[in-house]
Image (cartoon, rainbow, N blue to C red):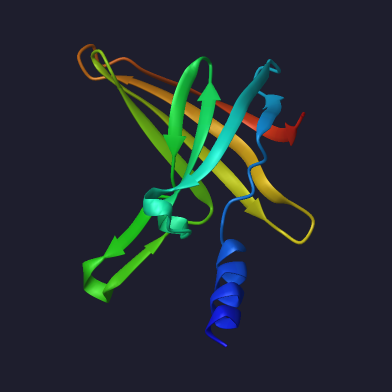
Length: 140
């Protein structure tokens, strides 16, 4: 019986995991330019399948990110959870940071990424820039 319960719990938990297919997801920027992200492997920290441990390798504009669901922690309500609608990753770069935020859809017709925003923030100079790639579609 315990094998059945374990298998059932793994199957139910896996429905909470992202559905970002490995390969290229392409869309358009606000000015109509083609943009894309390349999705690599999905892994779990400590080999424990759980949305808080989920990691996905993504490459945007030659920058390799490992993204995760952002934690949702609220001391006032004793909440410790995650935002299933986003993936985020950040890279330290000389003078600042680059961040990638991926929005996810969870509908009966589609489960996956819909857009991403790449942010560059140079703390030393104060320069900030970003672009958003919308309408992501899986290519291969």
